[in-house]
Image (cartoon, rainbow over all chains, first blue to last red; front, side):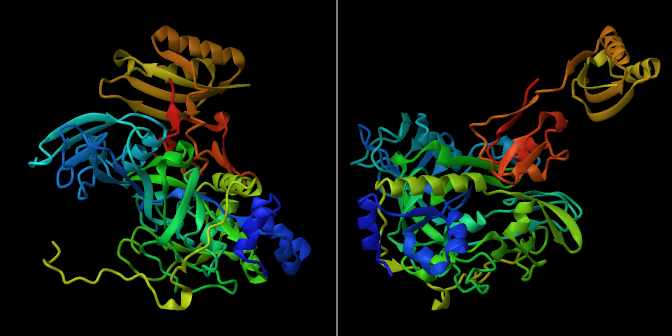
Length: 403
Length: 135
């Protein structure tokens, strides 16, 4: 048994034993659970995948004369920013796209530029054009603004993502007769391919399946800088069926995270375009798991062959919220390049970069080993598996019949 | 036996002539059409794999050039921006020839130019748009 405080003391002294979520697997296998739990202080995880529920808020500073952007309209490089806040506070979401981009309205849209790309450009140090219209008041008389802004010159710039790091995800296939374009990529007809999107055995919440160490206040690697878990993510759904290791057999827990955008690096926040679907942000995220006891150590040593994803049809079942799936498949099988679905050999492709997830886990390992990164102590826990907290469908009285 | 992958561009005035057929018959070449399209301005683009004796290949190419077709070797045309690429692997499910594939040990995406037929399916399938066709 160890405490986070004891581990932090060892980190500060440069004595902490830190390994990645891949390395712990071999250590537990070689030395046994109890010895591994004694020896290892921290296991680092990582993931690098498209996470649509991401965005950033900014305070751009006041112009002279002042302008009240709140209640007005604001575009950043043609992308609509949410201006329903105070005078010069803005929020930009990763999936926002220009309203009049012809590339998005013809064929399967290309979505070459969106909020995710804008956030990447800001982090890369590029100047971004802000055009705004406001209604003007006695104290904020200006009505229009057309200016270049730069991340280094504005006040706060905070990445604030309401839902990241999904604990497990679907493996997407297409049972229909035609190609479909989805957020899980392009899916060829009649089980032509299968796409999946999780780092599996490196993924943060799959290594702490019951949220025993990850909670509000956990310090994390976010976009190349330091960030925090600040809430459970939207659609957090801890009550799904789990296997004998406690690993959810379907998408389950999620995290809301935030961190200083000015510390982040463009290579860990990439703008992405899903043909026929939209724009998004690929987020690099890594979480250290303190090995407080043998039980937590056991969870971190779960392997790809012990984690399964449900195979879901994205032509009919997903869009129409039909329950059930076409079976389950392990991440080991998914990573082999071929799976069998309904008796058919189907090639697989990942959307989440496993090699980058590995790089993130290694960077975090280095930060902690060097004594540069201390673990955060959660102030409260995420809603747990047995909490009854669940992800509900829309319950609304329909205002008008569907046409 | 020689095997060449060629990018042929036909000006509008040649689009309706059976030039490939002439070259194939006269020089005993085998051919495989990898890609073909005619643009709105009626210029033709043909990506062709030809095989035959080395002399026959070069004579066939000369025949096409004499007729007014621009002929360039195809190799090196699809390029990956290695800074942009995140090695996610989305392209590998779409690539028909496995030119783009996942190295299972490193889980990084490899690109084998020799297998690429420049079909361009990977261009929109890549979320970070790291693949581009260069002429």
